[in-house]
Amino acid sequence: MCYIYLIMRTILIIGAGRSASSLIQYLLNKSEVEDLHLVIGDLSLASAQKKVNNHPHATAIALDIFDKKQRNSAIQNANIVISMLPAHLHIEVAKDCIVYKKHLVTASYISEAMQELDALAKENNLVFMNEVGLDPGIDHMSAMKIINEIREKGGKMLLFESFCGGLVAPESDTNLWNYKFTWAPRNVVLAGQGGAAKFIQEGTYKYIPYWNLFRRTEFLEVEGYGRFEAYSNRDSLKYLDIYGLKNILTLYRGTIRRVGFSKAWNMFVQLGMTDDSYTMEDSENMSYREFVNSFLPYHPTDSVESKMRLLLKMDQDDIMWDKLLELDLFNRNKKVGLQHATPAQILEKILTDSWTLQPEDKDMIVMYHKFGYEINGKKLQIDSKMVCLGENQIYTAMAKTVGLPVAMATLLILNGTIKTPGVQLPILKEVYLPILKELEEYGVVFNEQSMPYLGYNPDK
Image (cartoon, rainbow, N blue to C red; front, side):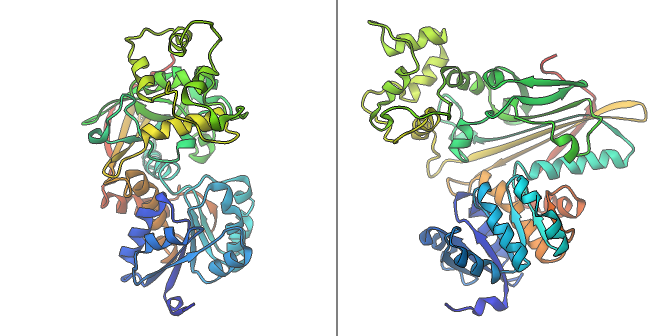
């Protein structure tokens, strides 16, 4: 292999999946002026080569993350490493980065194992930047910008609400659910599981168990895009420490969907179709109709459709029923085709049939923050909203808003602008100010509106 590119500044990108498209394109566009060479490693060499697209400042390699020799060689020959792997696979990469003294950037939440490397990263003067994608990422940066501005003016935080959603753009919204998969479908199916949603409302701790999560929503208005709803994220309380909001009265984070989605999704929750804790017998040969029927009571004469409507207490002309029909749930001929599958895995398969982005489809990211604060005896509020539209199935708004901050952080570290060492997330000014400013050039713009303090509305 030729190593001529090593005289340039080498960025190793591990993982060439859908989320890496905008990230790689950004760095390739900067490669000549910034004297960069990208090494793109993926288990599939073809996937890496597709992302390289014969660019003179990039090299594609086959990289098996479980092959220690291969992994070590790739990391040793880089100046900085970007890991776009699933979150649980970052840790071996991170350990190698400590050994070979390389900075590391990921878009994933900081795991306990990653946090344990903080002292070693600091000792070696290494920046291990995590949570620098969309959510987590842009949410941290845009929130901390305004929270710090309020504090610097002498204001006291009373309320912080933050909402984000990956949705389908209006022009590509072609189904009754007003939704298509723009990210990992499995995460959508399992959303909200693993414990009660926790938040603070007017100084009182609140908890919503999973089986009630999609019944408790609040409405949001975004100018030019209409009305949305939001359901609570699993744990808002961890942001008390992250954002320094220990004495705040209201802290709530939620996921945005179009109005009506949560009520419809709750049908799957109540039936048990989102359960991932057990496998179903002979799932491979099960039809979609048989899958649905396995959650319904036996009746000698009633059809699956009749039993379903009776159990869910809905009329045949209910829009919820039309949403179920649209998914082809009652098809006798379509087979699940998955061995030893859980209900959640089967539901994911069925939904993927209907909710996959088509080549020319556009997705949409909506982010909405509310900041309530008191200053000079007055209670005020700032609403900050951002909408980003994708271009097509490849260059999605999701790939843009995840990948661009990762790429920008990487260059800022490489160029010495971000220099604070350790395992961290992007809540320091040296990180969020330049990234938010540059993101505006790519259409990721937050529009802020000031108003009298409105307080907290849902679940009074």
